[in-house]
Length: 445
Image (tube, rainbow, N blue to C red; front, top):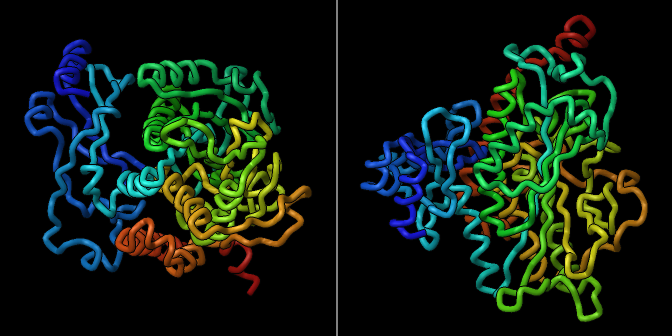
């Protein structure tokens, strides 16, 4: 967008403030609130690079000064005007825009830059990835005591859900006022939501996005999480994207539908002339099969994430693939040949959309470049097979650290920094003595 168009956009909406945002390692918004005049004079903001190595609990990795320049210099972040949107829930007219570095000179620690780095590999091949994410989340009662288990909220009926309500329209309608706000906010922000459904957990929902450009869809998921939390708070409940927020309920995922188009013709290159999945598609599948265990540290980025990988709970436990087989980590939906695509079911709702899109595309790219062949498609339940995914964040980080091909694509500095951040989080978590340990070990061992 030309600067004249941006200034006109601001004038038409009477914008009085600008939220300059940058997604951090976790996928949350960091940045500054800037008056429009200063925003246009500076065309962006300065932020210390160090914010991209902060842990989710506000700590710093032990290797901080090995990762970050000791000067802790500022990055000069420029707005991506394609991402500009209003902030629909504030009183004074406010704009929000994602900032970053030049696409050709990205910072190796910015998650958005990591995705751009992978997309350039595809662009150089003449391919255009198409992404369609599905994001699950729970609505829960306000919870200000972290020692108290989460509970489903009370709906319009005055009652909380106590039974599984998969695909129930009435269960969604229990929260109609909340979802009306959600849709109004999303419409104002031009987020391309497709469907809203009730998932299998108590007050667990899922939104599907219309397929499109990978970077734009990552931006939309980033904006959506922020929007959904705000809409929920306005109705005195929380929206949580934790991978496994409640012990007795299934986890929340971020399924990623993905296909590749030829840049010149716009045709789906996963399909052969006979209308069937071709060798390139099979190699793409094989790449994710091979590298998914090492990529789990990005698909499942938190200590809580690994509670989601549970047998018979609509989450993968191994790397099998199959046609319309939801027990597999990789599912090929039954559809028209031109819509041939792969659904990657490994990522949790707690994952950073930029990083999971990047690593999923990177794994598929490696499969194509290495000419890999996948296993036979599974026609039975993948839950009858053994676990093949790491069972903890610590194990996943070790596997990621040993994967040179993923390091080469995502960048060695990023993988080193990411590992340091997540190991610090794991160490902090490991110091906490749980209620289970006090209950069963205090007087019994």
